[in-house]
Length: 311
Picture 1 (tube, rainbow, N blue to C red):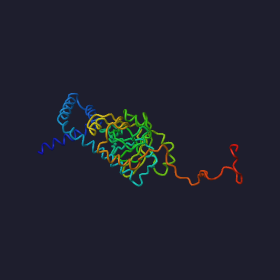
Picture 2: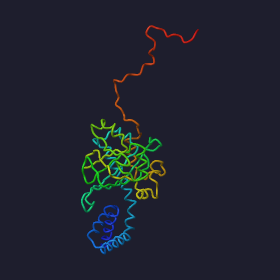
Picture 3: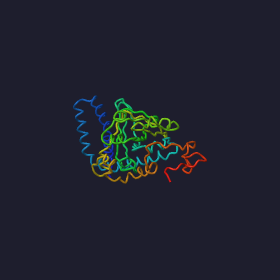
Picture 4: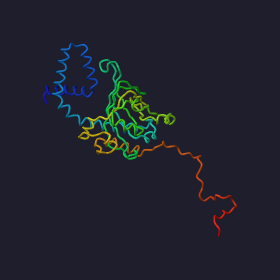
């Protein structure tokens, strides 16, 4: 490849990255418009249109591979979190979940240039649910999802954070798969319990439709995502399934087989939580009263049972 071609490819790569972060590009253009004359803004619009037409074939050619890698990466990060000895999330919470959403490497940006003075988030990942009408079967084909928002808070810090969301009922699952939902508004979302206090908090938190966790800098804790939005990513689904699909039909009704890139994600969940439980597992209580022995007579000692009929 000639040096000039390499330079052009780098320009297209940068432009493609900006296009995938539409909010960033829009805010950057808006900021430029405030300090530029109207004629200069028109020239910028023409330049952006020319770049789009020239780079679109290169950008589109990489999209399918990129989404496959994102799906594979979601499985890798989930496997890491669930197999960490000290991840702190109680097993019974995972066993009660209907669906799991894994969003690796969610970004948080602050500053005037990038977000107009507000904190912002963007993340992409995958969502899978248990199969069956009662969500009691093995984990099924995933949908790609997108997290977007203007403000958020985490119990752990970091510019790049892995977000894990457990969907705790069928309404929460259906809402996310049907339309864009606002966390804390359209669906209830609570920072998930971890550590020693998890059992005490479980009664309150398990009434939430979503439980959210985060891992950053090696720490795993509850995450507060209220105000952010979550939706199925239709364009990403089209790339991993090779056609336009309905996220709800894929995830809840099994209309399409899982893609190969979802293998680690599904294998991890089917191994760690193969069956959903309606109630948390309770420790065995040795002091609980035993069931009466069927061989023990019900009548008082020394007395024969009275006949029920005449001889």
